[in-house]
Length: 465
Image 1: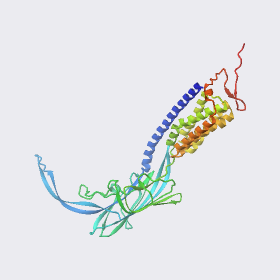
Image 2: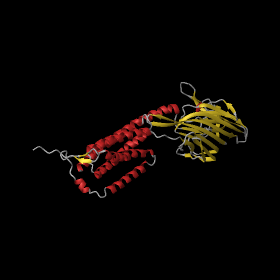
Image 3: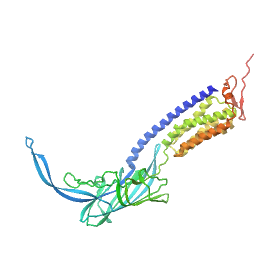
């Protein structure tokens, strides 16, 4: 019996190595697919999109005297001092009085190889009210940055107080200047269509003020651009409404939760209405992510040795209780049939859904095991004991990986239940006698199945006199 156990342990080790190799192959294919998908999707759909808040600044022309040293051009390399009057435009940040933003997200799941990518199209519409809070009339600049990581922006439009103005997106931002009297206000409205993947964010702190004293080489104001992202921002009267056509949404890490949410058909209507807000966090939504076949199959494959151990353990105990003697080669073929399940699963998910691949692989593996054990120990033992054990420890074990966040608990409960049932079933078994039982040689006869499926012993033919 000890030799039999050592042989089964060796077969288990070989099967485990095969699963490690298969799992590594799936991981390699997934990584290769991921690299290709990110390149392909990035060119067509961009990346996780971030729309930064616009900036508003007062422009003041300041004239001063500057002194500089320049070469005279003489052979001796002498220099001369030049004094000139220079007019520069100084930009002083001014707050947005209110922001009313809407974003409509239309989800479209796209599969590339072993991965699903949640892509979306977004329709953006933002209205921003600005005001001259000073005591003098002045010139003000509005700068609206285009969305980050977006390969295309369509239907870009800018209105000022209801009138369309020419769109100038130099430097990656819409820029427009207005003259405002003291206390006078204006409303800028920006509309566009774009696309991204996975998440959409509206960043409050990244719109920042335009850098002061910024001019080009001719002394003219440089094209408007927002300051670098990050930091704490004070936003006045901010209201953001995001509508989606998808269920199962989430919120990216580091973002504020909406103040209100409601069902909108098959999706959601999310509202952020905090009034005046001082925060470093963004507002945003994460689109639902479909189950990715590659990472899922790799996890199932790497945990397959645990599944096989429980299956072999159950078959070994059941064979002892039923008086069926299984040779280590029988365990080898059982392990091969279980490996066929994961092998089929790994390559079927390329062409069909994970659920369909699971059904086909399970049916094939169960058919291999039941049809084989039927020849060894009869139909009842093959169908009820061995087939039932495989359904639990192979199929149900793999199905626990659909339970995101509960897989470990499900496997733990399955293992504890197996231990309890086995302890109850073998509590009266004389293990010393079982383990001391000598091996049956080919000349002494082996267990086989009769026509009715019950195990019987075949006696060797008597030797001739």
